[in-house]
Image (cartoon, rainbow, N blue to C red; front, side):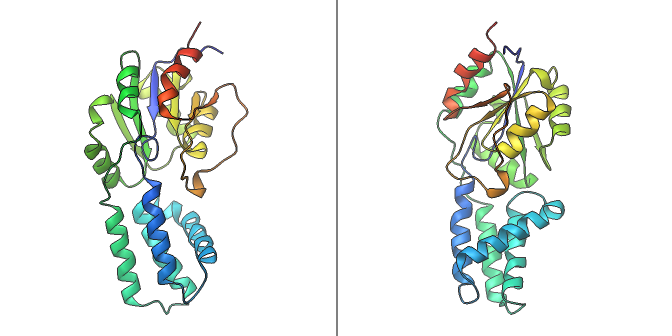
Length: 234
């Protein structure tokens, strides 16, 4: 199927730069702090449940993750968690909010190549201040025509953004590491979704691959220009 693409949306975390790998050490430290109360597997399951429960209240990002750790610590200790442990969890969250920005391979070359013929936008979700910080420190801002930091990525959001910044979602493509956020809702909106798997993906961002001729998967971002050339060929 040939598609007349005018606008390409890029996820940010774990698509343009590393992000999830900064959560793993904090989770390990969290398990160590609560080792006297429960095993690591049980603790991680309780934490994931808290994150799912809290998404409507805290949204996506490190601040919500930190609050979910504190809530889980209170739950598994039945309120006996010490102030010292709470302070360590808060410190861990602050450390995560200042982690360095490490751009993934091929990002700059791909953006430079695609910008000649397409409008490029960042569509990312999470904490506003943290996402703005990472984008500024990445040095990638000038490669994009627009940046949208949203509370969630839904079919309606994609329809609105690609109409506002482009020529409609049917002439748009969204690329990212999350099937649940970057691919499935984009395809449901009528656009093209491209999955770029990352070694570390948050459980809440997983989903079955859609059965659609508008779904594509590439091993790395460096393969995106060739894919776009193929799907836009007449």
